[in-house]
Image (cartoon, rainbow, N blue to C red):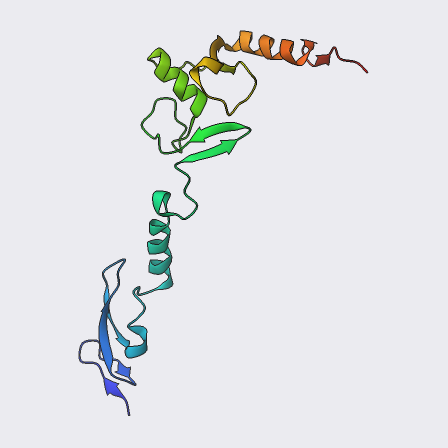
Length: 153
């Protein structure tokens, strides 16, 4: 026996109940065994879950710190002048800019004195112009000219 719903005019097999979607707020009529599902569609479900699983709510959240090419990268710095479009800032550049009280220019590099890219103590950081940073790194690696290594075996 089929029952016609008064609002939609559609035929339904069983008794239907109103359910409100937790994401979009749409009210629809569902059968009893669908009442436990809080979302009206897969799209609403995936959108709601993706919003819940962002940032601090994600089980793998580590305080916004990640590693890239050996450097510590900080997230959620969207308003910082040195941030990328995604809001990422290299930690050693942020520490140096806070130490000198201004954002770093693009031609300024921060040199790690002991060579450890993860060691971002201010005592281990040195601000250099880009051309001096390259020559200093090449001298430490034993490179006298561009691409010519002086350590022959």
